[in-house]
Image 1: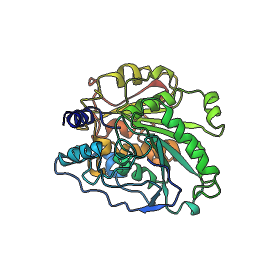
Image 2: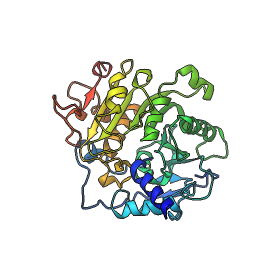
Image 3: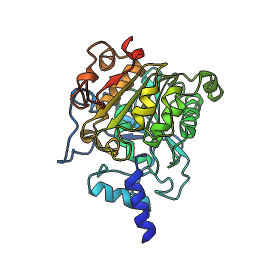
Length: 347
């Protein structure tokens, strides 16, 4: 009983956060959970991009009932509306008894009819399950991205992002894969939540020379750390970065390290930071209608990954839309107001 209580407490305090199968795609519908009556996401970006895009989603991800100890804790969190009530878990440890070091892929179901697509390399937070992020990952995929979702339930170091990059290259090079020659490794976006967000910053600090050791085709074109963990410094970041935090996040305080030694220290490349009103640490795991980060995350991916002129308006220009989106805290004197650095100002 004490172990169960301790596990639930750990999950409540620091959740955010597979199984590798042959790629027999499972088509996934875009029927997401209805929003809770407690709160709903709002604002310009959520109204524009906080709903599924034009592509149906296929995946090799395996999902089932959240049966084991941490899975039961997920159900408790869902019951009090801190997680998506429809959440399903992968069988990776500690939510199941299979290997915890795992990766899975999401992609447009009709990818054979499409040109090469940019790839999002995502890692969740500590103690998380890959299934916690299904709604957000399917959203990104539906706008024309391949998404690699990697997890070892610790996720603090950039190890899983490196593993995800290697997996993307393997899928692209395997003639038996439905993704054969369909992944544009020169357009890789790094993303992560909590521990995985901190790992995103760490990976974004690697030089191109180091990335060449992983695969010489890889080019990082942007980084999206959501409520990132503390073990990363902004001063070493080498690629355009957009950090997001949550106003009601009691785990990664928006007034803490995301500003102090991450965003404030990114000086060599363009960077942005925004704090979502009413967002908690669990917001990225919620259904789309309650996920304050959903719409702006799509805008970022489209801007950096597809050079989309409409999405770029959220980040570029003197009147960039992020600086007036009511979902995010604004105001010249507010330390949590949307900001961008001088490099971003000049774009």
